[in-house]
Length: 299
Image (cartoon, rainbow, N blue to C red; front, top):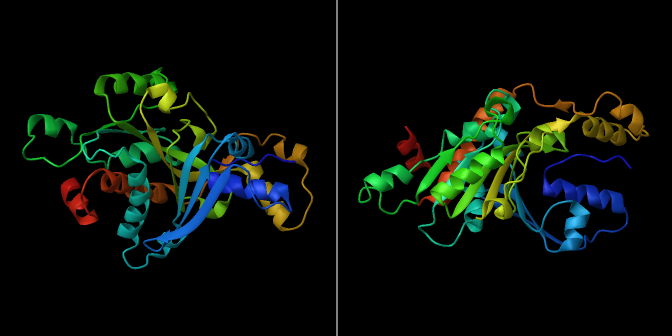
C-alpha cells in the first residue's frame, strides 16, 4: 500500500481507518470533536505504544483547529480563530501564571510555504527585556522571548543546536515552536492549525527533517504550533485517483516525483494572514489580553 504523507495527527487517524477497512476503533488512541468559537476542533490523544505504532507519532495530545470557514470571512472570524487556537495552546502550558516562554519561529523566511514560523514571530509580544527593566509597568505579563534560528544552509548551525544553547541561557518554562507542516488533504492547506505537546521536527513541512525539538532534547516542555502549507505531490495524485476509483501504480507515481510538493496559488497572502493568527493565538495563550489589546500593543 502506498504510504501517504501527512504531519497532521488527525489525518494519520483517517489513513489508519482507511487501511483498517472494517475496523473503526484505533488501539491506544482517543479522539473527540467539538466546536470552539464556531470552529471545529479535533483532539487526538495518543495514549501508549499501540497508538504510537499505529499513527507513527509519540505519545501526547494533538489538537487540530479546522479553519476552512475562516476564509468565508464571517462575523469576527479573526478573533474567533485566535481564541479557538489560543484556548487549545493555553491548556498545554505549564500551570504557573508566571511561567516564562521562548517562542521559536522555525523555517526559511525566504521560502514562502516554509516561512510561517518567522512570520508569526513578528506578531509575538516580547516582554522578557521589559520585565527586567520596568517590572512595575509590566507586572502581570509573562516573560516571553522570541527567536528565529534560520536554516542550516544559511547559518551553518543546526536548529536544535541553536535553540538548545538559547534555552540553556534563557531558561524558559516552555518552548513554543512554530513551523510549516504538510497536509494529506488539499482542502486543509492553510485551513487548519495543529497544536501539540510533543515537540516538533523542524523542516517537516518541506520534507527536510532535522533533529527533534522536544522535552528530551531541550529539557523543558516543547509545544508545537503548525500550519499545513504544502501537500506531497504523490499523496495528492493518489488521493485524486482513488476518488475517481482508479488503480494506483505506486512505482509510476513515485518515479521522478518524490520530493515534489504542491501549494496554493496565493500562498503568500495565506501565510501572511495565518502567521498573524498564530502570533496572536500565542499572545492570547500567554498573556491575559484580548485581541484588541494585542493589536494595540503591537501597533
